[in-house]
Amino acid sequence: MDPRRRDPRLQARADPRVQQRTPNTPQPSAQPNYYQSTPPTGENGTTPNLPLPQTEDQAAPYCEIVEVSPPSHQNGYKSRPLFCVVCASNQNRSMEGHNVLAKAGYRVISSGTGSAVRLPGPSIDKPNIYQFGTPYNTIYEELQSKDPRLYAANGLLPMLDRNRRIKLAPERWQESRTVADVVITCEERCFDAVCDDLMNRGGEYNKSVHIINMEIKDNHEEAFIAGKAMLDLAAAIEATDDIDENIDKILQTQQENHPHNLLHSVAYY
Image (cartoon, rainbow, N blue to C red; front, side, top):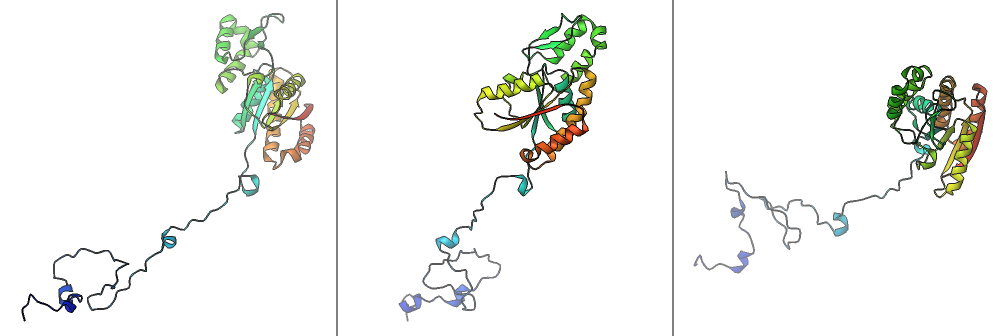
């Protein structure tokens, strides 16, 4: 028989001798064709175990949609309150409170409600007056150049030196737009000014804020004592799970342990 003429029935069958690998001859790894009509055979003529073809749904990676609830103290997370300590000039009482709360690790800012920053001068009718926003360091250097003995003796230079290490300059409450959770005022007129200002803002954010007044005399000794009282108040507020529910009990305990008269109100940003 002419070797060039072969039975066409034999062309559909592969010669197993041809499929044997030649020693030391690397064979390229062929990707299995899942859609061929005749399954591939192995060296011994058996059908190898091949993965079944995947449908479009099976091939797509599985993705589970999980609804994440907003963080709250019920699932182990509670946001820390932001305190704002307010006096008239943002110099003595509010900055003492700002200092002790910041050193204790609380989130705290401070400001003043006056029309200008007023500090004692050489006489009662000659105060030193500065605009809010004037850096503490500028005030310090000016007073030191005027009369270093006087202003060191009355405590202004040590106070300003402390203040300039905390922040740049005194801030005015009415010009601040930072939203605090708790405002601690240092005298009743500052308490009234904060409440009136928040009422005039109209409560556009509908964010509640607790305003607590501690009546503190404006001198360095009373400010130092009040700083310790503010620490206790801040600790009690931050420890509670619901300030709205527990504020009355917190203020009652505060009044029993400290001499400062307290006022409380709730307003809205």
